[in-house]
Length: 118
Image (cartoon, rainbow, N blue to C red):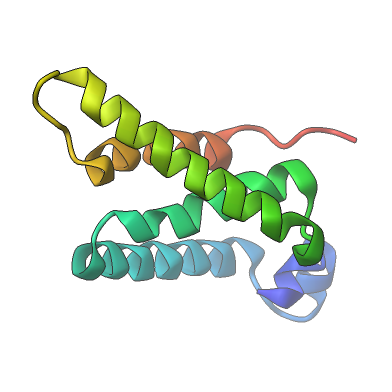
């Protein structure tokens, strides 16, 4: 994956198919995420969605983005809890269900949108 990240020409010169490695990587990440969500629940899904949102906005510098990840993760859970309590008052929709729907939409939007040109 590191070689593929260097660019298509370098990967091709080293004998690696960028398309195959990318699809293999996406498949492995999807399977690992599915196993975690099935065994632990939807709340760990926050650990997948929130850091990706922050890294798209602030870049990959961990020292600078870690406080933003913590703040956005806590805010996202709180917002989803408020939405879950408000949707069908006096009943509650679990926060994991609300975050699963909202997080999936946001994560798919991040994956499928065209990259910004610089």
